Image (cartoon, rainbow, N blue to C red; front, side, top):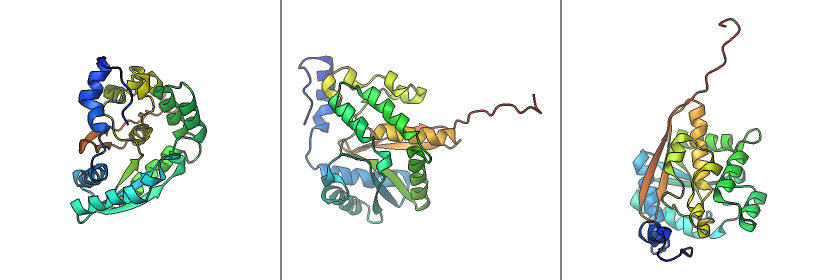
Length: 238
């Protein structure tokens, strides 16, 4: 269902012409997702995908069950050699108390995103280390790790430039700051993907995030370049 956007507003034009018209269209949704999954595998040259469920309180219907398995079947029809498997890591989901706070209060998506990103860094191993390990294990099998939720891709929900500059999530511009009805369509999955990319960057590893925009059956690629914090000079070299 499309959020209620004031008619004639700048956001109304953006929603009608760029975002909501296709995002709200559920025609052949399963087929679009299946074809997009197949294209993603072809795009990066892998033989399969591991679909990681990251929906703590999401729709069971989209978990390894009817609609997602139907989409996987469509993917196999579009790529006869593709292998698809399923996985789940609750630690990669936003904590239950954070989800409740987001749904029951006026917390902005930026605040929610920042607290979720902080959660991903806590513990030993941290959730982000678990996610990075899942990506590596998937790649050793020639598979792409795909982290999914029920929310579809919404183009430019956040400012793409902020990803390159590493601006803290709570200081970024998000669409919900333009219209409060767009608060909940923001998806935590994009934060998880960015944090995985940044984790590899800190390890000195180049990585790339593939965003699947299934409504338009297209893919956006975001590259994360290696970044290693210089070590402090030793006493001998000082």
